[in-house]
Each structure stands twice: as C-alpha cells, then as structure tokens.
Length: 167
Image (tube, rainbow, N blue to C red; front, side, top):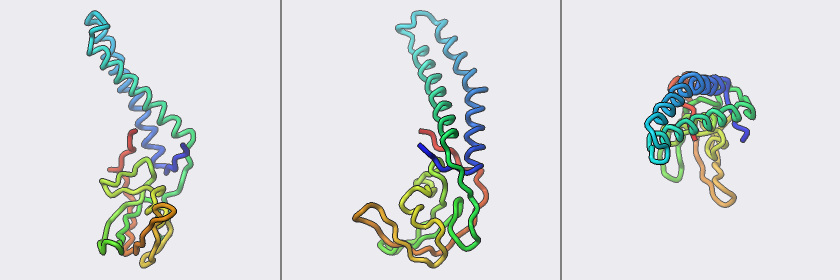
C-alpha cells in the first residue's frame, strides 16, 4: 500500500487524523457511555451502534496513519507545456469522437464520477508528462487499449475542494 501523495495530501490526511482523534473520538466515547447507561447491553441497539461507529473511527485513524508511514511523496509541479498532477486536461477520444475533461490527481483523491482521475489509472499513466497535441495510447490491459489526443492542458493550482477518499 505505497500510495503516492502530494504534500497537500499529507497535510489533509494529518488534519483528518487530528479531527478524528480530538473531536470525533471524544464524541463517540460519550455516545457509547450514554448508550451503556440505558441498561441491558444484550438488547441495547444504541450501544451496539455507538460501539460500531467508535470502532469505525479508530479503524480509519489506523488506516490513515499507516498510509502516511508508507507513502511516497510526489511533486505536483510540472513543466508549463506538459500534463502534470492537478492539471485539468481535455482529451479527444478517437473511438467515441468526443472530448472528455479530467483532472489528474493522486489515487487517494481519485473519483471518476467527479472527473478526477488517478495518476495510477490507465489514462493517468498514459497522459502524465505528455504535451498538447500528442496522440497517446491508453493501455487498458494486455490485449485492449485506445487512443486519445491531448487537446488542452489547464494548469490547476487550487485543491481546496478535493477530498481524501475514505475506504
């Protein structure tokens, strides 16, 4: 699990860990105590739900801490004329004769429904470091792939709305 993270990703993960430890942990412990006070634990749904939520929070904290320990820090800077991390790219898909717009992000922020594609995805790997006008082969697997043409690269600096995906 060697995630590639930017310095900004690391900062966001550290903020989430801190929030979960200092805010959510206290609230969830209180919820467990309150539910426990309601009596018979074997039939107390609120108690079991509160314990489950507390354990989920602790699991998320451990997951994020492990991710930070094993992460590979990558730079989100690229040359002015090439596709880089956090850039928005317009791609002409030859098979569909359509233009699609994506933003290249690290895998922890990837969300194809929001147009955020990971640098680890087939498209991300294919276009990273390429220039406008280049025709690039996107290899899906050993026997399949397709061509795209990089129509436009928009340098993006603001990551404020990007969220770290939770698993």
